[in-house]
Amino acid sequence: MKQIIQAFSLGVFCATGLLALTYYIEADANEPEPSNQPQLAMTTEEMILELEKEGYTIEKDPVDQTESDESPDSTSDEPEIKEPLNEAEGGGESEEEEPISEQQPSTFNLVIEPGMNVGKIADQLNSAGLIEDPDDFISYLEENDYSTKIQIGEFEITSTNTVEEIAKIITN
Image 1 (spheres, helix red, strand yellow):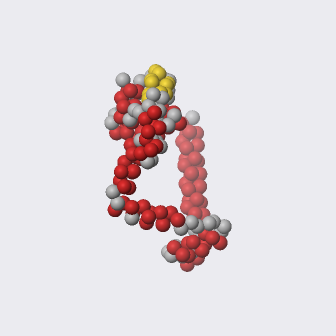
Image 2 (image 1 turned 90 degrees about the vertical axis):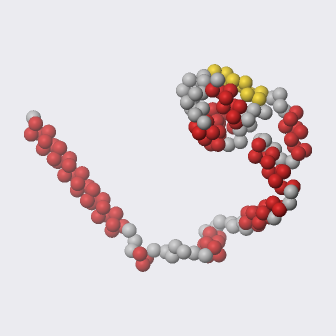
């Protein structure tokens, strides 16, 4: 019986070797030669022309917007607008902050069930409008060791809670 198993193993080993050899020989034969490869270094104009030939439309506005974004940075108005955008969700001008403050009493009941992962929790919070980016929330939980301390249950979260406060609520 031992000789039969050894013979079978030797056959499997030889077959695997032949398949690997065939794979590598065929892979080398299918690669195009360097002289047949298309030119990789293209100018921006050449890329635009190639894309337009294939039916794509090219917008040059995003480049212009970055240039226009840089010029208002020198004024004192732009940084004041950017800070509320980063801290408050959906924020913008100071006029829009007032309706957000009127919505402070709005609450969301987050139900964490057994087996839920951090991604599902972040998606629920994102769909409720309590966090802007689920990936940022997940990163925050993992960096601060909250991801392993999440509790099962129902939690009441208000629209004014920060990411840090939400993390503390769901881990206590």
